[in-house]
Image (cartoon, rainbow, N blue to C red; front, side):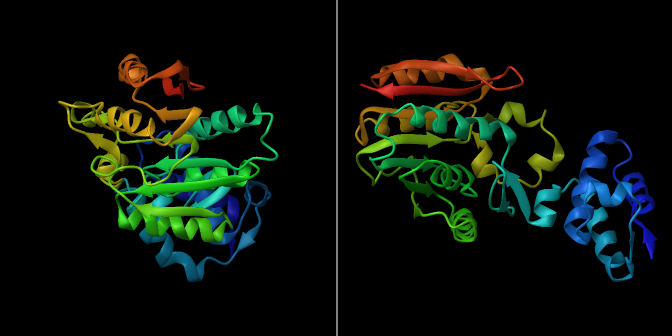
Length: 287
């Protein structure tokens, strides 16, 4: 039997010596909860556990962590908007900043006086794990939700998450750059598209660059606005009058994304900062 608090400290010491202590402790808490079902209270109260059957597993996980593989991929799960989502290397790990995107849409829809009686038709472009459309479908009353992605692997993960979380989302494989949007009369289009330039890659952490899907992260340096331009252009023909377009952005290009919206007849276009003060979201309504 092993004292869980002592095990916690042992594991913290074995995780990347140069890593921030708070980050190492967070990783260890998640690890012990996933493997042993221990809460922080269990650990602090020095609950005893038998780790003999898990020693090989722990050694393998520590090796992967110290190779910069994200813990979410190792454990196969990540939390988003209070729910547990399956993740693997086919999808981006859901970020807290994207929860702000979801929360914004929920707030916007609550302002609609007909919310309780009308179907709210929502489409997510580049759905990845499905965290955005699934969360919206579960949080917004009468939501009818669609989601597209170019990646077959991502759609498999998203469909599994929708099944596990009992969310009714219609998924479709589609390349937004080369195909029309197949859904009509939409109230909301949302997207967290690729927006990181090759120039920025060198400043990113290894656990992102080496493990997360580049197709979902990066755009060509010579056309960093390609997805925003295409999404704004194609959204016009499928949004209802007054329909909402909301996108997550690279803080370097907030003004340029706003310009793309305005060129395509969107009004009340604004940039919204995230909790850390970075320009994170652009939203606008179609005329």
